[in-house]
Image (tube, rainbow, N blue to C red; front, side, top):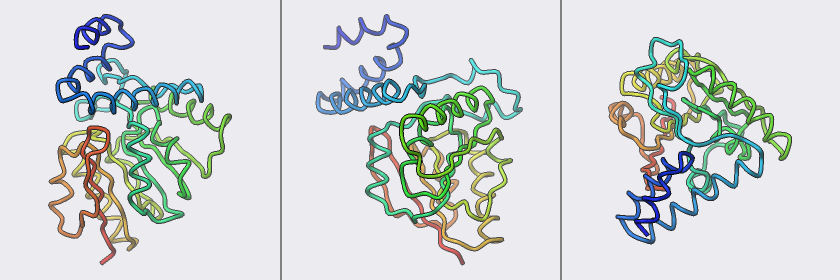
Length: 238
């Protein structure tokens, strides 16, 4: 089996996925099969809706004008099944506004549009990825029902103006500690100005200290979904 994975790495379109599978394979067959199913679901999603939400995109390959390019991490879409599991396991407020920081090609926006949110927003500092995400939304809407408005905003994450309706924030490890700290500070300022309960979803939480350093944030969910740790924090109004 491992020899097959090594061979499949020769194909450019499969190189990244096979590298990941080799790592998982060494962890055990059960885990390997779980990841393989998720990869198949992700590919099937794009084939079904005519979208382009994979594979991983290195920031070095993108023409990004922002001075904060070095603070960002490579684009990698959230896996479909783990995101759907999260939506079932955590009761987020209906009619909330979901904001994905570092939305990339917009797969999470498409998935979130099928939930009970009043609005879904994606914030992305790559203009190229913003265009792809917008095209994906249009293609997706042409083949299935989107339950709420979906918007893509071209902006540095820490310069995005948080509105009083924004209350569910999603991060799939999109940038470094400095930018995350600034965004969390902006969320806090918004709460102080417009008191409300907010939720932060942090997948692959390398810089969770930026959130947990504020005792007002309560951890209400923590689980490994699709190979990545996912933490959900709730912050009630003072």
